[in-house]
Length: 489
Ligand code: GLU
Image 1 (tube, rainbow, N blue to C red):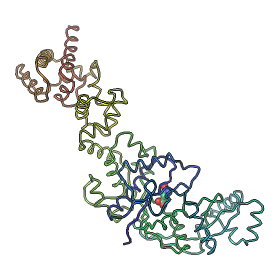
Image 2 (cartoon, protein in one colour; image 1 turned 30 degrees about the horizontal axis):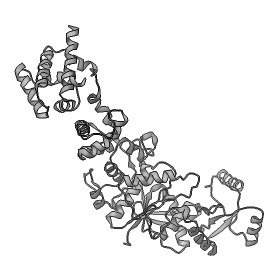
Image 3 (cartoon, rainbow, N blue to C red; image 1 turned 45 degrees about the vertical axis):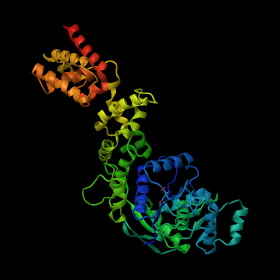
Image 4 (cartoon, rainbow, N blue to C red; image 1 turned 180 degrees about the horizontal axis):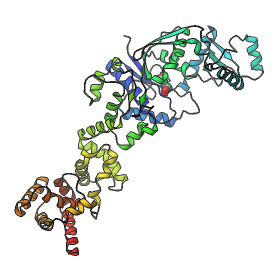
């Protein structure tokens, strides 16, 4: 096999779609697996839709996902520039070559003429395509057109009756009849090349060994192969990765949930969870293993195990993976990730003093097992920040009506008030002691305390809640509930 050189070549025309991130990841993993090079090139020839903002978002998302590149935009390299609009002179040179060897020609057809041709073909039930009106213009005719103010586009002369066979690593042998293709534009009248042309020149000059990209580019591939042949270049290997479908098996779209990488980042998904998830969208290591670290992915990734059938985007699986990585990460990291959400919700303000930071870590630790993504942290921590506890729902209210409840709460309040600094084992000891003294245990003992302190029948471990709230808050919250009892009696 040639030295592996693969590329990710995004068009910066909008948000970074998870499908694009999956293509980037497959390329990156393939390069890293083979000790090859990963190149990032920006395909910005669509001048109207390309923006620097989108380019920056895509590059930032790649970095966030941990995909470093060896050559390309921002990092440079021997085959630059790596932004297509900065390579126009290079394309011009190969356009000239194709004009000279007769594989391309100037076309002066107007929009109206092309529209008429298209409609006529559609009326006859034929595939709309360019029929080659300008194929054999003489130099004199060209000059006359130009004198009349017409600017040419350059079209590629598609050979007649030829069949293009592509050996695709994922899809197997695929054939295309040239007759259905029609002479296509390779350079627009403003001097900007089209995607199919620029991609070939760049992939060749950048010595790309494997083109790994989405299946939607498969119909472009015969056009690209024709250009390789016309320039006497060997095409790279191709691997077209299947579409990503929503759970209802229609093409993944906004209706199925977030489609932009940024949205997942904003909600507090961890990059390693997204990488793990994206890697399994169409690839599997074989066997049952679903949790794979970046290292394992690099070691195990191969194009041979990329499936031909479409991948289904199962957000529940992503959530499960993310929950796993949240629980597995260091508390320090998870706290760092939680802080912006807590701040935005108005619970804390930064910078935090070391004591407050330690306290916030305890808060985050007590709820992290419930989190699907970091954004959800604010849904679970309310109880630590409110001044007044609201008893939530009938179940919680019923618990406080138990006959032994006042005795339990009074005893708790006394013991907590009399104790020194509260620790989790200390709290557990106090609960046990009271249970023994009053002859009750289990739910009857814990639930009233939980409801009195948090307003709810569920939540983090009770001893953790007590320690985080601290003695003063615990005593005063118990006091409030007891006061409520005496007022109603
Ligand atoms: N710029 C193309 C896209 O974003 C790249 C296709 C390719 O990899 O050849 O879809």
